[in-house]
Amino acid sequence: MIAQEARIVSDAFNARAARESWGSRCDPELVFQCPDLRTMLALWREKAGTRPVPARQDFSLRCIKGHLRDVAIYERIPVQTGHCRYRVRLMGTEFAEAMGDLTGKYLDEAIPEQFLPRWYAALDATLDANAPLRFVARSDTANKSFLIAEYFEAPLLDEHDQATMVLAASHFSALASADSLSATAG
Image (cartoon, rainbow, N blue to C red; front, side, top):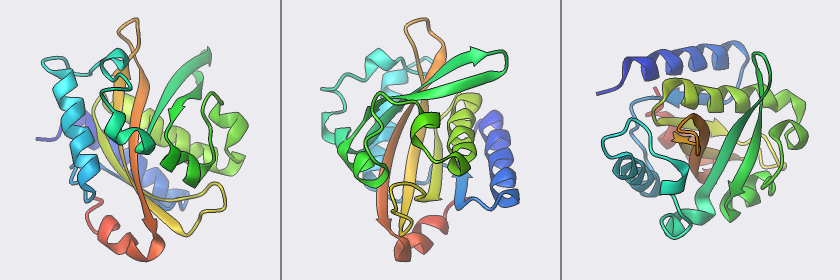
């Protein structure tokens, strides 16, 4: 069953994506085509246990070792009333190959300005939903526009038990295979 908030957030993201011509869709159904992303969803749920959201410290490097190359962790940093920045805390080699290694960087310093709204919207949607989401998107960084990606994104609690982090996992493929991914996106 899909949480109502996840559905509302997903619908809002998709409406904005259509208005702004992003090559991106949000899918709260969590019907992942990539088996590794289904495994990440199961791991996230296992680590959450009875809590709505697991903590960042639940995901040690040992815990995600088999998925590390496909994982990124983003942290939302408030900078002023109503505004925030995202810092990349961890970026696996597969992510880095497709997007450039952004580990330790703020997105607004590393991503071309025209793509930032889509990045922020996806990360904000994940934290606003307070639940995992599935995204399918065309790559728009590192001159890799021929790639399409399926993403698992889910919130994580920081050391103060606030959902300020996003655990992401990805599966990249050539744009020609986009139909199989996007057919189930929403």
